[in-house]
Image (cartoon, rainbow, N blue to C red):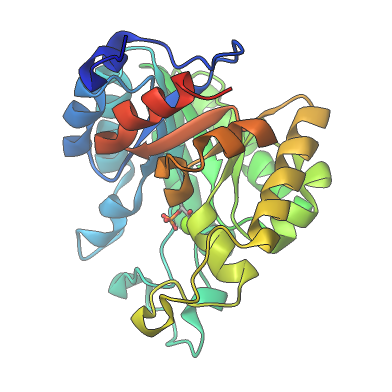
Length: 292
Ligand code: PEP
Ligand code: MG
């Protein structure tokens, strides 16, 4: 019997050979959470925190961020909410950061590079995340990682923030620290990075851009932008193998996760979790259930 798409909402996504794949939602603001729940998301696989940094004229305060993260954690009711630390720079500029104009913003000061340059801003975000962690199941994910030292430094700062909160008697839970694998450097050194990370989430949008040396914003290059390129596929496979060898899970949160022609192939590579826009969740679950 063919199932109606809506029937997949309450079904776990299990392949025909019995592998369970988690299907999560990508969200860009709190107002996206309703759709995630309505479509049966098993959690939030990517919460882009940029909205907090782009909406005002100053950096979002700790309190403002805390309230947003706490609301996400509460509304997901114990389901995992993976919050990505700020991914400003490149296409998303915030004037109050007063960053110099760059010739090559995609190769410039963005994401974790800003976090590790402006530690004040990063610590505020981490404090807000830890405070919110007491209200649900929050994990942290860092974008644009290229080197092991960056992950180590992030962990160090997280440890310092925890000590601070302890001193202030503010409750928090331990949070997993995952990284986005979205640069060729990260994929090629995934074995080293896996030793320092609790999970991987592959950002195929940027991974494609950086692997193919091709600006993902440039409409003129559309016919060359190829997320199925064998170079991208090999990096995906390397990342999955390195993750599993180190005993951590690996997901995809880039657009490729929503490409149901690819579902079976991605599962074959070893992908454990798919995270995509809420409107695609049921289709993805269906594709998983129909995969080998
Ligand atoms: C990606 O790069 O694939 C990704 C999920 O992050 P973003 O699209 O926000 O850069
Ligand atoms: Mg990205």
